Picture 1 (tube, rainbow, N blue to C red):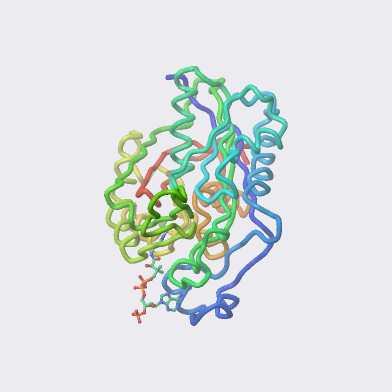
Picture 2 (cartoon, rainbow, N blue to C red):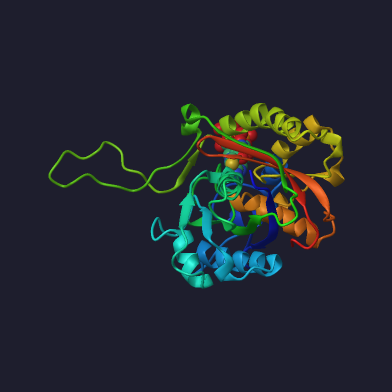
Length: 333
Ligand code: COA
């Protein structure tokens, strides 16, 4: 397989902040309840006409700038989108035009919820590794706030909006930035997190008993149990596959779903706090965007030094999960 280089990474979050105290205007809850169970203090949400397309566009611009590639260098676009503003045209096709990427390149979305970034990276790796495409733009962007049931205090406390983007390309120095990567799924437990599309049958036939609401429905307890029982051991296996020892990897950059889930992975790897990147406090769960947001913000805040290695891991609806051990080259963000 041809080696892959991670050339640039960017992120974007909306300006509008909703604090835990703000949520007390919607239902009976408290900052103490939310923070102690999730580690979340606030989240960002789109407002007015702003959507995940705007966030994805800004994140992609930043990733392109850092990578040194121009829109015309991109020969494939893959977006991880689970809560996009529209099903089609896809986020990828819309961004293709907005970013001025020439029309002939393929552009498609994949849905793997909060694992979307790792899924997209694995697909991109296959394309680059096989020599099918050379330089791929990956975008992870969701406006979760538009599909959140704001009357459900069990789910609406968790989610926020955001976008992350990565430019990956065939490596020009023979070094592969993916030391190991794996993706997985178990549809038999998929009912734990659902978003069922609003729909209707043809008016000439019997109607279905239930129609979707288009909102997130989640069994938080089951998701929590699934995450802490599956993800930590899985991450350890992915590290083993990379040929590295967990202590030799510089950072853990996990999906930001719940601080206690992050800590369960941290404890398994026996990592000290300085090796674990967590910004859930300020953004909540931004689904597939959470890993690139945490990564780039970690660099901006001096928590991550580039020229290092990191283990990424994601999990979410499907149920899906995935992990990757990657090199973080200098200058990527
Ligand atoms: N404020 C105050 N009380 C709340 C509340 C809120 N925001 N949400 C729920 N409660 C109440 C419930 O009504 C329940 O009350 P009851 O015992 O009187 O019925 C009680 O708190 C316990 O609710 P429960 O849902 O069992 O809480 P929990 O301890 O499981 O915490 C989550 C809920 C959502 C924080 C937790 O399950 C979680 O984080 N799960 C993982 C979800 C996740 O990460 N999803 C995305 C994966 S990508």
